[in-house]
Length: 321
Ligand SMILES: *[C@@H]1O[C@H](CO)[C@@H](O)[C@H](O)[C@H]1NC(C)=O
Ligand SMILES: *[C@@H]1O[C@H](CO)[C@@H](O)[C@H](O)[C@H]1NC(C)=O
Image (tube, rainbow, N blue to C red; front, side, top):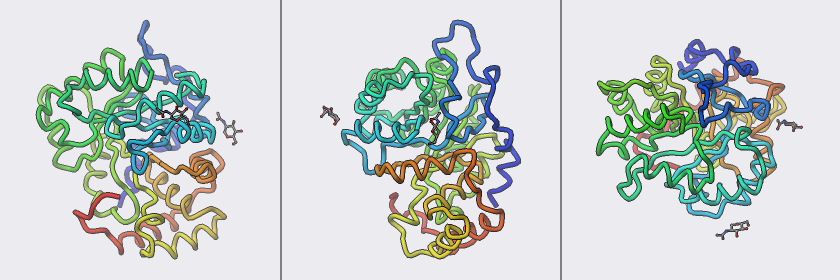
């Protein structure tokens, strides 16, 4: 059901991009090109604006909200992650900034995502500047509207501000998060819109395929990529479900862990991933799925996991994990 998304922008087209393919060739741009050589252990997913997004990202939401994540982010960088996924809502951008500085990794060897949350009624420019200051960077690679409701006071104005940051080369790519079919259609229908979001970052794992299927399909039709968070839910907060046996079986067949099976299943659908594991062994194990030599699931295995997951579909309205 979700596999046709691969036809849109085949991952096979994502060989190491050459410099000519890198974004923002505009002379004098404050955004240098990404040094893709630093992302050789990631999967590069092509976006509708000519850029790429590296998968996986290391995210500091979830259980890390409000925490001093400096050590955590340093461990993720040590494990090889180069894409950091942030949000003002997580309340820890300054700690990520500290980690980035302490790491000594050049900015163009990192890909940094943050989000607009409409905190304290701040407008896009004000909140964006705060994120830059806290993260200690001069530009953002990917800026997302965190939820449809944070733009509900002025959907056209918020997207126009995103387009403005984008055209001023302060943001490499712009997109959304947690959009459903209705909110995504509304954004796409804005009369003055000139830029299509590159990504919709949503909760996605084997137990929400049916619930998320329609918005993923709409995104595919519009050339919008999907990124997934809470991907490992079947192994964390929803254990004992219908995919457990399948994960064990495929894991044994392929010689990989159950977590790697789920991540590879998501990757096989052309969907980017945000992971949040604090355990360095898990961080490395999860990143390995996105490297070049990882043994991918067969089509039959992908299908088997898809079917098993659909048997245990979580009800809409169940609280987020
Ligand atoms: C990719 O992973 C390998 C193996 O862990 C490591 O030796 C190499 O330095 C990594 N490459 C980058 C660019 O991080
Ligand atoms: C956050 O953690 C880092 C690393 O452990 C530490 O150096 C720093 O002082 C902490 N920051 C705050 C504000 O507690």
